[in-house]
Image (cartoon, rainbow, N blue to C red; front, side, top):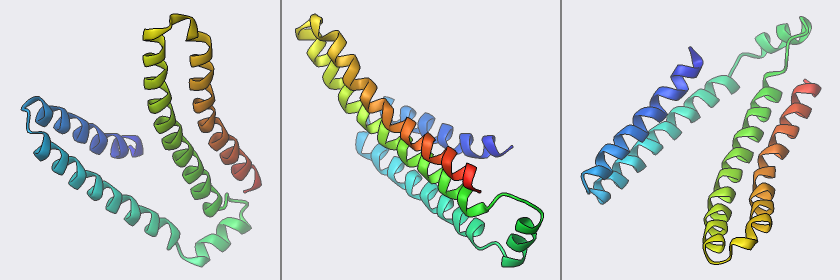
Length: 137
């Protein structure tokens, strides 16, 4: 159920943007996308504030019963999300540059893939940090 709550707004945003871009209303599509992203950011901040504002008594009961610390899980989620977004941006730029280089010199394939692979490694660092945080909880 939680997956659908996350996927549906993102899917609606993508489909709406594609629909508006196909009509050649670039400025309108950009404004709509910006407004939707701000709304999603606001919703994420509300969910984060709700999760952080959990009563101290519930935290004490979870700690006494051997439960997982919620702060460590939120930190792990932030680490994975930040690293994934950073890796996506890095792969976008390095992938575009690699394709441009390959169109001129096809023998550069090996070097280009190494650089794109290094950019993808950023996401692995976030995953390692998340695993360490969950292990400490």
